[in-house]
Image (cartoon, rainbow, N blue to C red; front, side, top):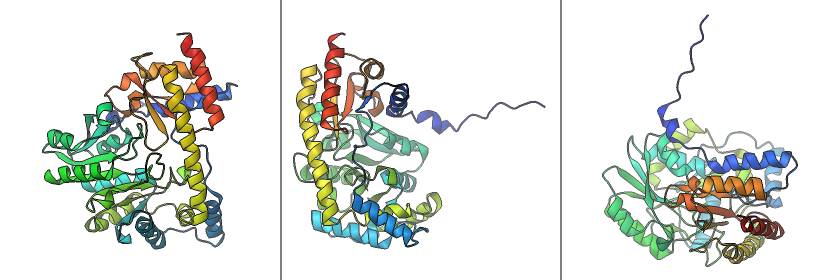
Length: 392
């Protein structure tokens, strides 16, 4: 009996690139299993566990038998709680019906790309930027439209970019504030100007705010303060410390909600129930105090690396305003960031992320440091790099 060769994968999968940081993480874990001490500065996941009040809320809900499906767009009481959060923290009057809960911000973006992008349409993105965003578009037969954004623009799209790069097939522009990998933040004035430029093109502005709350140079803001027609993506993963719980949300125009509800029913059925009950405790004063203390600790780590990295020879032309990353120019050492990061891992025992993960513009000469481990380990990582770089 003859065996047929495996059928080729769908063409779209050939255009979805691997996330190199995950390969670096796997290699780092293999080195650890072999007895090496590796300092992890690669993955965007701080070393803080989910706050106890949130864990306790999830456990109590599960013990009370609240383990079944919720509505496809999430618990009504959590959508209401989020609407209240926008009102109390940002002064935004938000109808909770506009809040769509999903399995992570990634799930929310998948819903949006499925609902809003037709075949061949594009999502305009800054290069460098979070790589999965353009891949989500490709999965739904759209495309990412990368616009080079250097340090002179603080790695962010500008209104001039919107006007000069918008094409007939461009549907929306997606910006991030704070951004990954650069940590830069868009001011309310900049967001307002971007929203106006997108309106002129009769397009849509989507704003990734998943690092909102992890701000170091000013108070957190939301685009909804200046552009009620903008789309917001957010998450309980970063500021709220719920990475593994997989819970995020989008704020969308009310007219979109029925379509997103139908898609959610078909794609996910519902967000994870225990995660939603944990999230109900996220906004309590005691929890917020814990989260603010953690933000302050991240700020201390940021300050240390901003001083130490230039002393090692890395250029940091734009200091991060938020998130927990520093995007550094390593051109003094390499024009092949992937092989450079592999050598740093294997020879110095420090895991960092290559710029090639974040696009094409300057990707070979940039690396990302995540200050997601305690200060003592950051200091040890810097010393290891100092010794290793001195031998190049």
